Length: 103
Image (cartoon, rainbow, N blue to C red):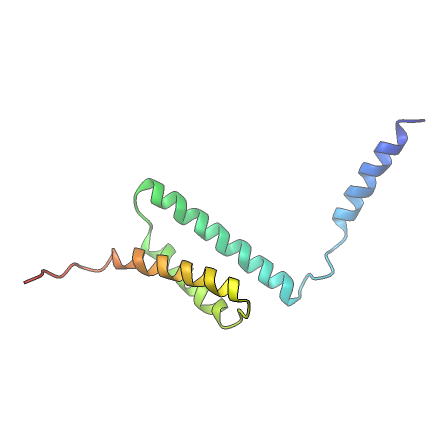
């Protein structure tokens, strides 16, 4: 009988995980999804940097994601992070521009 309690505790934890989050469908849930999507894109950029080249399409997609969210960002720390991402995207995009010969 003593081993039944841990099993019940695990069952309770599994049941709690199945309960929908009260923020599903709200701005919080959308912001969390957006954040996860951006983190996934940034992880891909990191992998691309290690390989040697970031596909231009990935940079364009990331720039668009940041631009869309910037208007809703009121947190100064989030704005600072978005500034950093935006700057890095611009630097990487500049690598795709043809070089001009200096005279």
